[in-house]
Image 1 (cartoon, rainbow, N blue to C red):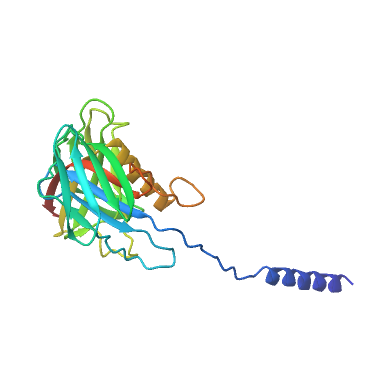
Image 2 (image 1 turned 60 degrees about the vertical axis):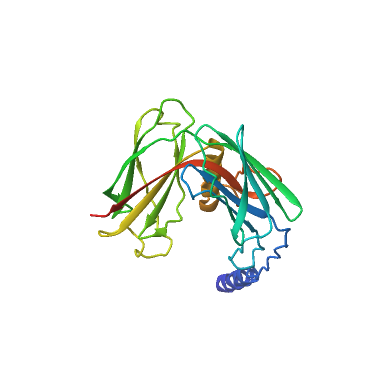
Amino acid sequence: MRTTYIKSMVALLSVFLFSCEKVIDINLDKVAKKYVIEAIVTDVPGTSNVKITQTKDFDQDNTFPGVSGAAVTVKETGGPTYSLTETTPGNYESAGLIGISGKTYTLEVNVGGQSFSAVCKMPQRVNLDTIYITDEILFTETRKIVNAIFQDPPGLGNSYRFIQYVNGLKEKQVLIRNDDYSDGRTINNKLFYFTTTGDDSNLIKSGDHVTVDMLCIDPAVYKYWFSLDRSSTGGTGQATPANPVTNLQGGALGYFSTQTLQTKTLTVP
């Protein structure tokens, strides 16, 4: 009798487990496309530009053609207004647009019957003193990491972004910091990054050429990169991804950043 009971329970449990297996088709609704604006003004000639694309549905590919035909202007408060020219599809530039630290700039974009705007003040330049390589242990492995040395000025509110290139290839890692816990100090900022290819092919090695851009950015732009990084990595613990915090008005995604730019290069020993 006991054997019969056990067999019956096993059979019942098997039916329950197999009945729980179900293919779920997720119906992803199509949503209205949004414009994506990446607008940059720097203090280095030839590096200011505005790129305009549009979002796609989840099931579409990851190519985002530029949006042509936009009217784009950048106005310096108390100074000139620059009309940007479309140089390639979706890319707008003005050779005379060179930012000045302490000046405030207003971006205006009119495209597809919609208008977008943003205001951003260019921070004071903080000098990138030097970069060098150290060997660091990450997850029991030794890796070569770039160190960026600079002196943070007294007074909270300084924010920084770093862009790293290895043998001419731009790393996708978001590298940012502010001075909330290092105000007025000499900062050794280690540019830790993690590979996304699943192998070591893009790790820094002896003989590689490494270039680092240091950008002094507005706190609102820091919030954009911070929220983008946390959303993409799940660092906020939110249940679903969210759009990064933008300083653009009018419903577009992206950001408007007026930023200082410094570049240093080294060959890895």
